[in-house]
Amino acid sequence: MKANYSSELFCGHCGRKGLSKVLSEYSERDIETLSSPCGYLVKQSKRPWGLAYILSRCMHCENVTLTKIDWHDDFSAAEYSYTILFPTGDQSIK
Image (spheres, rainbow, N blue to C red):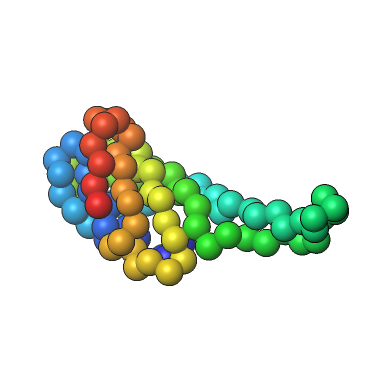
């Protein structure tokens, strides 16, 4: 996941973009298991995509927002899929 994603975060309360301080983040990357036709493990490799959960505080209204990010190594941070889970829970931002 690219380090400059915080400039793409929206506040779920006031709607401002890029004015968030990251309080906590969790990111996971999928692992692909490649096996032989006989079923033996050949190797495990990290896939170039994953999910991240970001808890941020808006520097304008000072409320917190929880955002889910679907990311891929080949995309820029602006191309990630951002979904605000809290406070609205159904707002999706691309």
